[in-house]
Image (cartoon, rainbow, N blue to C red; front, side, top):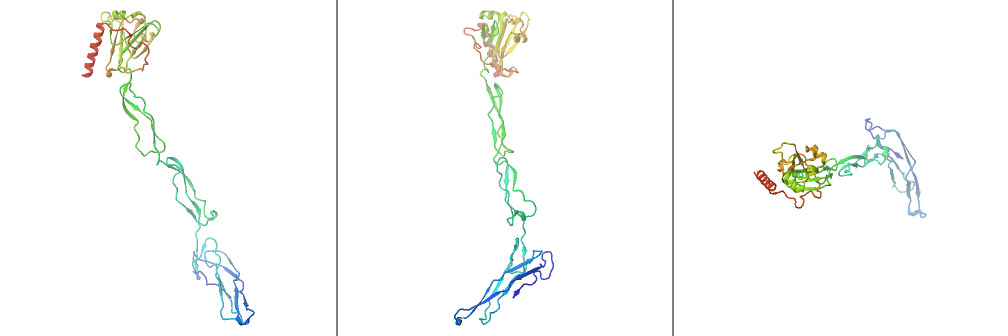
Length: 352
């Protein structure tokens, strides 16, 4: 015999449940009587599981009918009989709820995991995540597959790249050093190192003050060097300087100044031109451009300036042979005394 359950929807038509139109085809049970050769041992009814088929049309929201069969008592056998129950197969996406008359359809959807960490800790990288269809078949899930990767930007490990300090901006005295400081990523969270620092310049020529003159052609003729002091025409002649043959000169010292005069008495009794030279090398053309005419320098003064009165433009000058004082060349007592007194007054003025 074949038995089917009542309507799963119990006659109620709702959006969630519709009575399926199903047909169930089960073959009749095949029961046989097995008796041993010794009839006195008794007989047993043997029933084999039937083959069942279900044919259902939409909707699939309700379970298939349940098919059962019972083996009737075989003749001349005991009163016992076995009952075999065959459960219906389940469609993909269906789940059985115990022995209830209702069943729910499992929703097929994308299962999306959390985004992972960025592939880099400083700069642009990639993040990935797990995306799977709930039934294991991507084609069963609705819509396009959500992205599994995206670009990301991280600054957790970004640091500052720090360059070397520059030379002091001042050759002598207070100045500033600078350096390049750049973040190696989109953002740096640590305190930015300083890009500027106070410094004090100590060039070799900061405390030097000498003037060297050459005669003849360029810087290759006779040469005399003079420290701080005042040198009249008589003094220059004593030192071997040919006043009308000065072709070039050099002043060494960041705070050194040389003033040249047309006449040998520093233009005291004979007004004439005067020219001022600061640290640098000057050829005949440059000497004349500064105001010294016809290369005729009859007297000059070499003096050390206070640091506060240094010339606006200081040109670095390399040291050349002979730039210092020539051996045996010293100002005479009058010039030396004037230089010493001038230096003392300068020191007192700076100290005050």
